[in-house]
Image: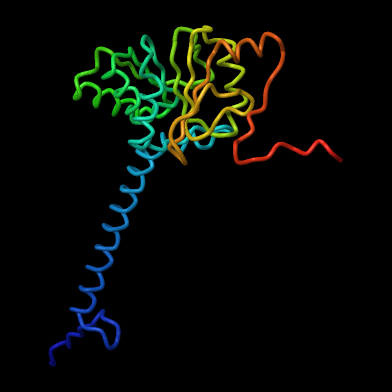
Length: 232
């Protein structure tokens, strides 16, 4: 009686060896691993970036653009005869606050981005001015600036008109306001310093509070623009 024949079926498709299949499986597993790592990286990136991006989704945002060395120097120069408390509205990485503290101010910064606030606190501690600085995670529209005699603002045009009213209402008449990058739309600056993007405009609270009390405003006309012709 003949032995039963053994049939061996090769599961590999025609034209593909076992080694080809193993290599394909390895590639597939590697693809899964890479996809997982990429997905995890994107989640981590979103977690870090979200606090930076979220403020930009607001109707009026104050984006983080680091102050240049010249801007910091100009701010300190126009405030060289001043002292007391200082606040930087939208303090970013804290460089204005820290520089002001080194020049004798009791300086504070308000910033929506918690990562920047924590970085600012660490930097102030490393540079030895943590006792004369403070950084707060807060929306500028929900804070009163009545206690500050010096205000620094790196604003955007969309917010400056609203900020005029807020500061004119809250600040003491002895205060000075320094605007960087963009001037206030109706206030007349006491003087300016620097040029180009490093220009700073200095405003006297006594002047703009007086205009508020009398219900009047004055439009600042840049020097390079001609006044409108009165003839029609």
